[in-house]
Image (cartoon, rainbow, N blue to C red; front, side, top):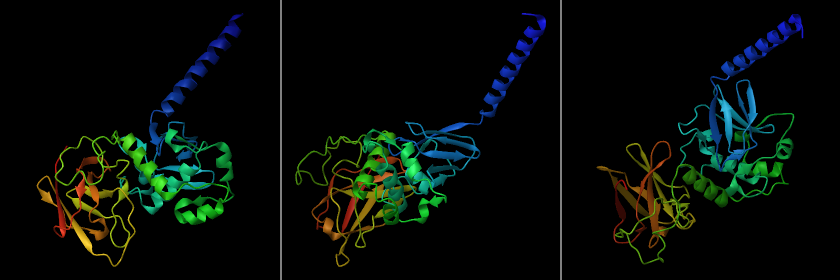
Amino acid sequence: MNKQQLLKLLTLSLLLTACGSNSSSSNSDDQVGYLIDSAVGGVEYRSGEKVGITSSDGKFIYSVLPVSFYIGSTKLGSIYEIPKDEKVFPQDIVGVDRGRMEDDEVVKLATLLQSLDSDGDASNGITISSATREKFTTDVEILLEDIELDELKEMHPEIEFISEDDVVEHLSFSLDSELGVDREVDAISQEDGESDSSSTDQDSTSPLLTRYTQRVINNQGISVEGHIKNYTIRIYSKEAEVANSQSTHKGVVVKFDGDTSKSIAIQSSYLNKKIVIALYDTGGELITFSDEILVTDDAPVVIVEMSFK
């Protein structure tokens, strides 16, 4: 090898090194997030000029906000601020509290994700295949927020859509799992009627147990909710109730950390049934929860005193 050839090789090596250095520095602003309902892989994401597909663990890489998510030409939505835990749930994309799993837009988005899972088992992760993305590719961009769930089902009759109850249950389980909340049914294993509101035998770490997954509703069929300071109060039952506009109300008042909530109206069909009350912070994380509470007819208001567990 003569000197001229050697000089060319050295020059080429320096150029390649320089290119590698520039590529590295251009990615210095990249950050990582994870799309979750279990982990959701196979969804396209866009962050400025960056376009990619979420990996099997839901990972996406972004450098600017917002980050928008797509299945084919269907825009699932955008997120304008990545949560501190780097996890993006359907609630975060819709822009509601993470505890609002029964929000119509949340249910619609979660239904689509879970129903498109390639193996039909969302519990082991959700994978959107390239073939599925192709089916959702059209000449015109479709905004998921602009169509109803029933319209979506009519547009894609080939898809077997999961029921709303199963969708909400899975999303609830995924949220608990990702936030490190144990859903094992340990202490609440007694038969109905063996425990009352004075019970202190509570070893479980979550009110969102297998037997307590239904949000308590009012006479209009709306999930009830209350607040103490910055905490959100939600009430759960073992079974779904049917709204009865003629039904009278029971009230639930929660006392926590020196403060008392306003009375939360629930329909009287919960009489002689058990409920569990949970408190969440503004990020949707579980703060504390009550023991099983038997709703009785002793008084028009059920008073529940709670504390940090």
